[in-house]
Length: 217
Image (tube, rainbow, N blue to C red; front, side, top):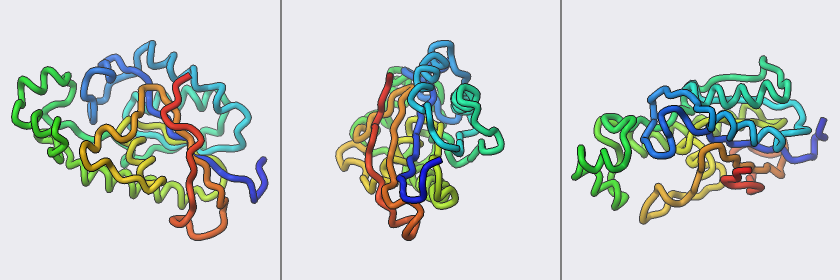
């Protein structure tokens, strides 16, 4: 067990590839399952968590994130009583574009796609506002870090969720030119931030430092 003065960490995991091909399709609220490749990608992360003290695990309710979380929980024998679901960790909704590829969206919604490519669109047709999505994730990650002020926290979610969590904790705004390109978060990747302040000081004033960003074994 780590001492009171040792840093704690937040481990941000993006789920693996899905049967619906998250690598090429816009799956937001679509509840697609992990593929065999996706399970292998998450299993490849297992050794990176070896030797952790008691952790808390929080994941998105969508099946691809839930299964990814439980692969890690089972492998390490973590206490299932310390595993929770948080609805706010869902991916953004892509509305009418759910499940489509970029090419299919460009054909179906050409005006929107042109705006999206320029970084000018705040939401997909019928989908969730990027601004509101960012606020939702920021509120969730702040609350989770405040609530679990000691020990390591593992968050298993989606590309957009992990990206906004990193921005929130590091104080990094989206790039002005194109907010989609400032942080890469690949399928089955791990990002780790370290809190050197430990349990001391106001939670929101803690300084998070990067140990890993978008690491894929």
